[in-house]
Image (cartoon, rainbow, N blue to C red; front, side, top):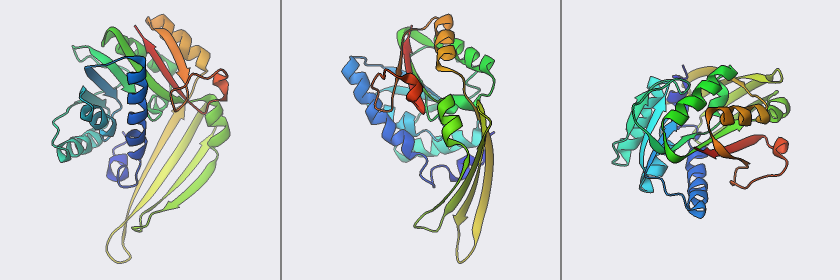
Length: 244
């Protein structure tokens, strides 16, 4: 699953989300006075968020369901001289036998789980892997986002000749998107890769209730800059932080 993504993910610049997010999140952690020593990044993809954390002195590990993504993550870490431990596993059901100060899951990876029971299972797994007073942070595409922004076609071309086409369609609480990437080779030749994914979302009230059921507290719904917002239902992407 998502193995095709690994072939063009970083090349098309999709790692920039994690590169830009980590510094903002680190500023929030510093401001809050939370200094995690260990971290697990769920759905870590090509490892960019992990690398950002390690650069800031956090002992970090990653987990992803795609073996190809993990291979790329290992390569990326080694390019910085880092040796990060990456786990092959399902973020809704993992048992690593250890605990962390901080667990993260970003870039709407949680939305790729289309059954709410899997969200519930993930929350319980996260709780079981957090140290006392540990923090869990994840972001999610909201129902508003799927309804407002997921019926379109986008085409983007890059200076090196690469381009991709994304086609999305929404059915309210569920949506599908197909990425077709054309990677430039010599002359007029291209390599084509295609991946289709489904995302589902659920009400923020239901998510908060389930986090509480799993044992989380101090649940905060925030925007991209990690500011608490009064009207949470105005958010296209919600960042949720909680602790045990």
